[in-house]
Length: 342
Image 1 (tube, rainbow, N blue to C red):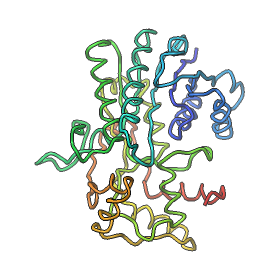
Image 2 (tube, rainbow, N blue to C red; image 1 turned 135 degrees about the vertical axis):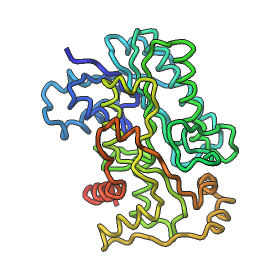
Image 3 (cartoon, rainbow, N blue to C red; image 1 turned 45 degrees about the horizontal axis):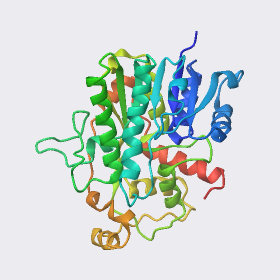
């Protein structure tokens, strides 16, 4: 009999890819959405990509859940074997009140874990972020970030999003240690996730590629992220489920660090006829603009920074190399072009 996975935040960009790979691997999926009006969106996003779409309505079902409400969580856990908790806010601009990000992230993670524990579900995969690993400066003497590193949420240079991911992950590990020691928790820490979405209802990370494609900025900031393909992130979640070596582990899922200009140059090389900006703005200009624009201000601590990320654990878990991030950028751009979104 197929195992049932409760996948929270099923309408998200990454979660749709996880849904697809779970179904392909033979799992039944119960996707949580804030409103059941979005259930059809998820179904129709994955349907064209399935090798076998028969009985999809039986294999993919939905529950309405909210990160900030207990309603429905106990019922949603009925018959569930595994919880994959991806739901967490990821805005393109930082909120005026950071609790608007931090509370749903922390409370949502704990709500999912408490409901799983109450329902007797011991296998949980939690989506965190490299933000919880590399959001603070690398300790003196270290040459690269790995899963032993933690962002300091009290660091004044960390953004609200970085704090939200760090505090939510710390709360999850604390819950397992103090309340549910029998729970087999694995945390996936992806970097900046790109790659072709399954439909045109995509989120923040794809909008960065969209902005580059539209040449909205006369110059690009000297800023970047550890980057990864969405298919690798989805596969990491799915492959970890049955892999006991991942129990109690964080797995930093990245290919390599890429600056905005690296993404832009890869896209420009693939689509030379497109007007793609590859000029880099001086750091002092970006800092000056950050005095007036909170979104720009939030990236100024990372200007000029290039982080080395040790992804050895991810490579061992997947048993292969990661998809190349510059090709993922091109795949994303091709999707946007083919679907006339840029």
